[in-house]
Length: 477
Length: 151
Image (tube, rainbow over all chains, first blue to last red):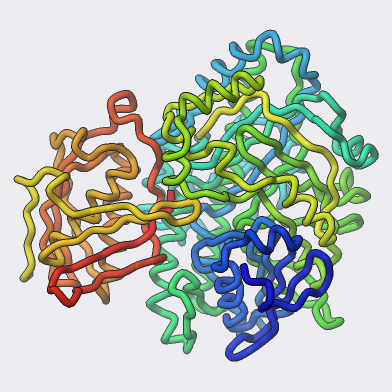
């Protein structure tokens, strides 16, 4: 990116000044080196977001921002319904409520090493992953409605996990306001056999060990110690979320001229929050959030069952579950006034800071756990949210991952999947995948340096580093 | 409808399709003498992001119909209808018969159920997007169409 076009506000904050049809400025939160590497498309896309009706404060891009659909991945924007604000299907993305949950195991790396391959095979058998994978649960219409309304709460009621899990999930495991009637038959058909499946692409289940601890006190609060084994689960609302995203993007794109909304990019399709299509989208999107929360809860159950057979003394406790593609109604102070806003985070994690009333009591002093996924060969990070409820912290948001530095095509030209598996095995990382081409596409070298991203997030004041996680086993979706 | 292409007799290699790069996802494009041939070519490029279309048998047939206010939205609707069939019936498609006037489209897609060993599917197309969406008739009279697929 040509950084001469931005005003440097601080070491890790760069402002695109308001010009032309921009309603507010845009702010990119990244170090100078990340800025120079960043795709010019981020500049264009975050600028386009500022042109949407009812946007308040500024549009923000996180340190891992890259070219997305309409919104950049790593984009955050808040809209005020009282000022004609919009909800944007493009601002949430196709994989609604894609997110990460982290499980503690009570195990140390030395407990895992002797049985790593056996455990990897067992997890690979237990958790449906990859293209076309289907689960054992088949949901027909009535039961699907209960799932779409209940989220992880539904899953726990079905015996997948314990009620204690729910307190460790955003929205306490169930997003209010879901409207299953707004979910089309096609979206339901796509979900019918997909509950409890990882999916494909960049989704994964990873066994990791805690490497460097950056903040001992925060790590202790989160139950993390050096050498501990944890499990990260990264997946979303599968076909249902995609179908909802596709259908509402189309409907909003066609309806936009009727609302006098000029779309700078069709992928930014949006509608007034209080319009019929806006209300239906929010109802369907919230149902998709519940679908994703149920999905990650069922996968957690499958993981616990697999562990119970091989390492019965392991106690898989949920640390927290975050969604990074979502629109939520939240209260923020803008220009000194408390306002109800619809905050879109696309490829960005909510990062409430210490003292936030919505946090579970256990994390209220520390701030919300934030999980930053890396690639299957490098590292992931646990951070703690820093967000005050004002606009200075990007509406209490942080980054979500490393972000790709190379296209899938370029990665397959450069790496052979089998070779990637062998090289990672030599470094002690077991990869389980049905597709060697898929492994090549997700090769560690195809991703940016996640450490640079989390350092910038900390420097920008979005979140604080807690601990670094190194992969041991990766079940690739 | 005025424009009909039946690629039943054509191998996937006889259609003009290709892929282009787009960040985390994959762009697909096709060319043809008619809009219908071009749409069939783009659909073949869609299969090719999952597996080699020439390795897909044509045992099963599925009917698809769409209607959209513009040829661009029609292309996205057509591809999303194929993706829906792929997702819900575990199908991959080798060839198409397409009839379209740019607003209405009727098609038959021939393919088979995914064989995880033989097809080794690399990715799962999740949706056709409006990114890099083009349906255009060039100066030489040939059609070109493209968009990015979210995988």
